[in-house]
Length: 86
Image (cartoon, rainbow, N blue to C red; front, side, top):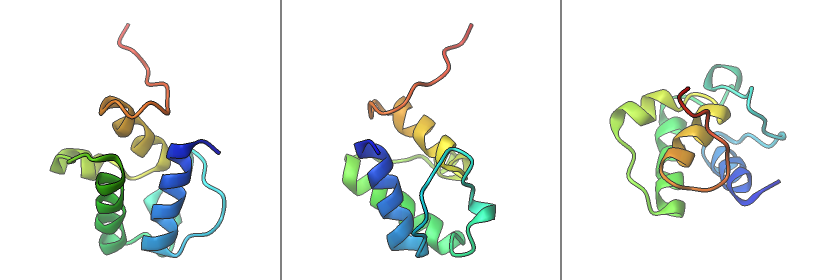
């Protein structure tokens, strides 16, 4: 598990009591504890840990681990490949 995945897993553990392994397919709709309050808390944890400020549109977009990784990568958090426009 890379550093970013560890932070995402920790944020979901702290905010939504989710303790299973994470993968790109993990979504807000599939984690019982990942409700709107846990989502805001997860975003706050990620902002604090990486020194970022997400726009509202980004927070709405981040409904899966894959989407979280993509938004972090767009902010220069070097964990994840992001598809480049063709």
